[in-house]
Amino acid sequence: MHLHSHPILGVIAGKQISPGLVQFRSIPYATVPQRFARGQLLKVLPSEQDSDYYDASEYGPCSIQQSDYIEQDIKWNQFPAQPTRSQTQSEHCLRVTITVPEFQLASTCKLPVLAFIHGGALSIGSGERYWYDPTKLCIDAIHCGQPLIFVSINYRLGNLGFLHSPRAADLVPPNNGLHDQVLGLQWIRTFIAGFGGDPENVTAIGQSAGAASLAVHNSHPRAEPLYLKSMVMGGSSTILSVKSPDQHQADFERTAESLGIKAKGRPAREVAQELIALPLDSVRRAEAHGAFCSESELIPDKDWATMLHAQRSKPNTWLQSQVIGSGTYEGSICYLVENEKARPNKARIFETICEARLKKPQQLLDLWGISTNDSENESLEKIAQAATDTGWYLPAISMCMSSAGSQTESFLLLFDIPNPWPGPMPQGKYASHTWDVVSLFGAYEDQLADELRLGVTAYRQLVIDYCYGKALGKPWEQEHQSAQIPTASGVKSLNHEELVARREGKVAAFAQEEKGEDGFDYVWEDVVRYYLDSKHPRIA
Image 1 (tube, rainbow, N blue to C red):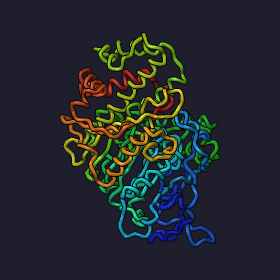
Image 2 (image 1 turned 45 degrees about the vertical axis):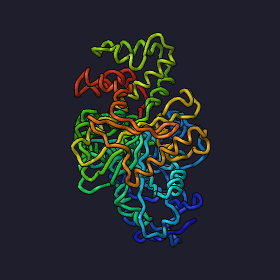
Image 3 (image 1 turned 90 degrees about the horizontal axis):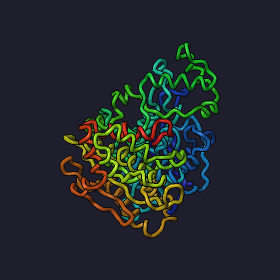
């Protein structure tokens, strides 16, 4: 146990997790006065009976979610089984875990901060998940002379975080999970200096659903800054479910009915009050509702979940720069979902959709090499690549395009270090969804082959340098595009000619030729996502 005297919060007990690193676990940053209510920022820590300090040496609860959430995450990301790390669940889950170099707790200088928002389709996950352990990242940062402070933010998920009734908005407001994240980031700016962090040099990093959330915070107009820089990794508005207030009301009523509460024809406030009074296990058993709500405070526009909207949305003036990251095989999640569904005639169905909806279908099919001569497994690999290019790469460059004419610099990062773990997807072949942040943080470092460690180490250094103010190559410009590509052998730079000549660049050019400014959205929504269909599990 390591006791630290915070100048505002008082004495806090952390845990020595390795020589030179102290972790303060599950510190509450906000409280929820009632189920579904807006969180309220905490400015003091809860008092602990018969103790002179607040004990943050053990993990506290994460958000309420399905009990098999760890197994589900492993399944949809093709990771190895993780060491047992039990974590309770509670409605009182608004907590941060802070990892600090031990020497920094007695220092007067302030270190850069990396604040992490986890993914999980807004329905499952925790910042304290084993594979998000930042120990290796923090140790490498110390060894290269650029130490960091790492903070993970937990927020409400599923029904507690995103169920909403516009007819009872005072009891069940929209996008609670997003508002929780804002409170977490505000808490960091307010209190991180007492842990040795620089509140004016915070880099926020979000992955998958966390990246989509960060895209909201980057562009939603806000006078007071939440952070200095951001890294939007493997996620955007286009891969999440975004519903209108009317759709949320319908979901609210269906959820209530599924829990035995009559909702049709009754005042929404009465239904909400019964949901608030239900036992917690009932809420856990209900189908998880993980969808942003448009036409709301943080997402005011109906068309927010489009790439065209992303291209036109300007980042906040306080956002110095943003890294927009896309793995070269983010569609791995689509591969794993489709593989389990095992539908036949994949290539034929995909071809038929292209022929019915595109002017030059064969041109697009040829870019991915999709053919009815392929085996079902070959077709699946290629269609998942199509999902990557249209559902992740096109949104990534759309977000880069948003900074044109603004004070914010954008940097494109194409993660291309293959996932080395066995599973349904070919082992060691593709840079899969979520592997970007997992390899960055380093939880499985001791299991990596030597030929991968070189690339992972170079990639990690790239991110550490970015936190310290070094540009990630050349900023994105529409007429002078560029990208950094972490590979197994190191980080490569691509110039404009090289980037547009890649398959992804040709897909972008095809989409614009096919449908003009609406082309990106059309090829994703009306072709590739149409094939994947809405019956599948969420793909964030």
